[in-house]
Length: 397
Ligand code: LMR
Image (cartoon, rainbow, N blue to C red; front, side):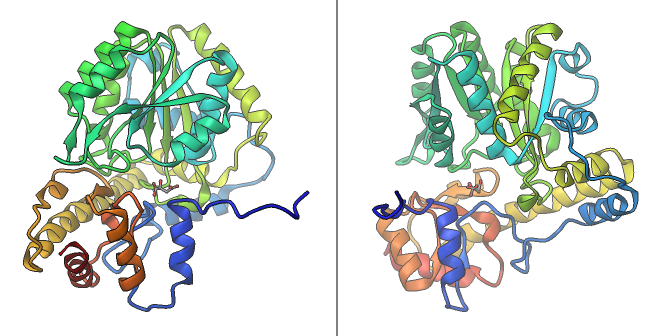
């Protein structure tokens, strides 16, 4: 059965990671996958994480299975981080959370859950969106469509077009929104725009699904949740998928969660029971270590204060690199106005580079950027900045 198989195409993001590893050029620069790097170009283990791991190593007594939906303490910690303390929906039992293997695992469980309860639903994703969104929802057997989001020519949101498209959607279709740090554009909705989207979503009876993979990396932990909470204020039902890959640096621990906001406590428990059937048929129950780290850090006032400082430092470095990149391009003599990079949020910016320019960066300079022109700003350092700006100048001019 395998003899005649052709190679599947490489993944547009993680395939570049593999190519980067194979590249022998010592001056290579990786701006492909959304992985944070510090000023020395290293993806560090956070101090708060190391300390939590030491505590876990001392205290853990068993490696027996977790529950299908993970640990209750983890679910409570996730809800507090997303909703803040004492949110009425959480206090009222309207919110349930299942621990999933990373954000991608959470999206897939969400997709399978939606397919189970509403098989005819179409999932609407922004144009552009994270290239794995279509893969995940299609793999769950759902129809997929796009709504306008971004105007590449002016590097700005296509907000009116987005609202007009959402106004046409049939009730119960699913709208995927990016909680903060839109991937790949870095162009986020303002709070006023979130409120308008919430109004249309409520009016049309749509199901919002918020992919919240970058909490804390735009403006702050609470600030980045504000749009999503505006939506929750209007909506009876919201699906939220969050990840601790980026804000805890727990990429390879695969730790994330699927959270459902429901209309009643009974509906919440029923929904969770269906989520559990979906998980059981997929990976049975989640891996413990990453969730234990998150629960330990968020459950300790000292460790969580340290972690918040570490998130603030990552966020600050990303903002610094945005500023340095724009200044570096201008100094290198690039005439195009790249100031928009300083207005975008989180790890990513859409540079407007063409596929051909991206190819040249890779082949002539060993600089790895996603084909769409998306760069991971968090991969820029003071050391690689001059070479990056010089190469950009050459491929643009
Ligand atoms: C990205 O968009 O680069 C990250 O979310 C990594 C991934 O899984 O694609």
